[in-house]
Image 1: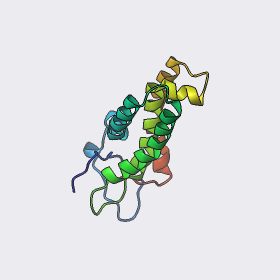
Image 2: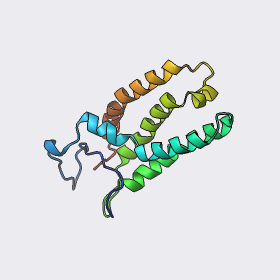
Image 3: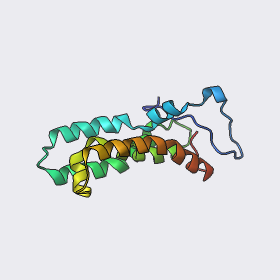
Image 4: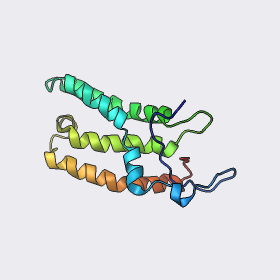
Length: 148
């Protein structure tokens, strides 16, 4: 079965049986960030949020909360070709990317969690997420979490 989502190609920590990835085959930082963002889940999330009225605040909050584990499950399923291991770093980073994006785009949900939330706060969270994604990838790599 072909992959439903692109798999991030980043170096793994060395271990027995590892196949090295040539530097030219590795994703640059921008390409990796784009692949970490779970656009499939975002599309479904935006559809669901578009049909749930703003007055149904608790429904909107629960849809947002449930989207986080769904993101991990979807990335694990959609990026794993037959006979290969799960890209655990991508599975771990995609929900973080989703949360940063959702915080920036859904201020009504964030106001339920933090009454002092303002429109500009979402932009700060999104920018911080873009900076933190490669740092977290490096930390997970050093901890031995595999990707390829």
